[in-house]
Structure formats: structure tokens, C-alpha cells
Amino acid sequence: MIYTIKKPAGNKVSAWELKEEGRAVRYFGNLTEDRLDFLEASADLVGTLRIRTEDTDKTAEAYIRKLDLETLIASAEGEVGGEKRSSMAFAAKDKDVFYYELRQETNSMNLRVEYKPRSKRTYLNYNIGGMYFEMPLRGRDDYILGKCELCGDGFPKADEGGITIRNASRFALRIYLKHVPISGKDSRQAELLEHQMQMNRHLAKLDSISREGLIKAQEASARTAEDDSKPAAEA
Image 1 (cartoon, rainbow, N blue to C red):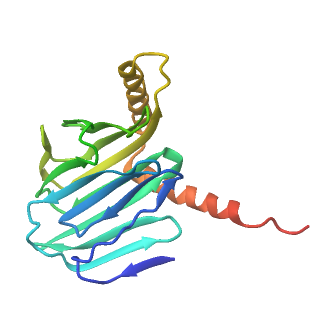
Image 2: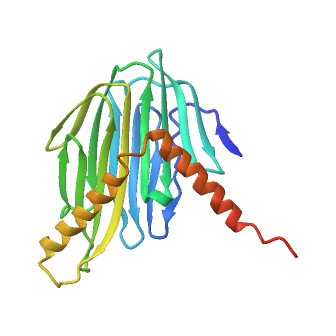
């Protein structure tokens, strides 16, 4: 079943559910200004990632958003400035990542990506490959780590405040969130670095999986979950 809503693009809606207990990304968007809220059970809101195109002053026409209740893939489509544009978001449970993308028929999208962490103590680093952050949890020796890996085309440029991508037809992110307790066996920085390297290795394993492969894996995972939830046939 696909849940379809035809409303003006100004009506933003949460489109992602929990990926697994304790971690979630909420997706709001209207094809010119999208927002991803990162959440963790023990920390509530971790931070907000904003994706803004240069044409935020324009409203998407013929705007439709959908949520496939079987695969939990959220999508939206419409026309912005005469160009067809679409977005898609889902939580790839068996791959342990969130996937988000914004597409347009021509390579004329110019956009800006900025992350606002909840805590001022958050370490944040932007680069042309994406973004990485470490947020300490108040009153605990635990951290929330996040890595957003940039995929797609266009020409990215990073600065201290965010990432600018010009002349893109496809902008995509693979998002990996991790709750890390510090054991104290090694220095805090050494432990955080080891976890960061583990995240890099995990995302590197996905490099061989195409966009279409991730979508097919999500659909297959949803079918498997549905089959597992069905009661066994009586003998």
C-alpha cells in the first residue's frame, strides 16, 4: 500500500520512522528546503541537517508526496522553476544506514548543506566527501557519532559552515549514526578514533552497492520482515 498526499509543498511532514530501537531520522521537506532531524533515545534530538537549494523562494508545483507502507520508502515529486525534481528517503535496516537523495532531470541544482548540533560541545568536521560529528552526552561518558557520506554528482566545496554543491542533478547522503560508550581502557580520543575508523570501514563496504541495489535490498528486507511476522500455517 502506498499512502499518497496531494497538498501544497509548503506542508512539511515527518516521513521516516525509527530505524531501530534508540535511533531515528525524521525527514521533512518540500523539494527546495529539506530537513533531517537526527535523534537518539538517550539524547532526544542530536542535531538537524538542512539541505537548501538556491531556489527556496520558489514553490514546487504539482507536488505529491508518498509513503510506501510496505517498504517504508518516503518520496516526493514536483516541478520547481519548470524542472522536474524528486526526493527519496528510507532507513536501510539490514545495511544499518539511512539514505536520502534529491534528484533533478538536469545538472542545474545548486544547494547548501549545513548541520546544527544540539550541543555546543559537539565536534563537527565538513569535507568534500561529507560530514562527521561527535556529540558527548550530558552527564555520561557516552557519545553519539554521526557520519554523512556524500554521493551523487556536482561539484562540492566545504568550508567551516557547511558544504556547497553546484551543478548537480543528484545529491545523496548515506547516514550512519552510532551510540558509543567510552570504556576507559584507552584514551578517550583513541577510542573515538577507533569507532570512527569502524564507521569508515562499514560505509566502505557499501561502496559496491548502487543506489538501485540499496532500494532493492530495502524492498527485500521489508518482504522478509512481513513474512516473519505472519503466523506459521497450522499443520
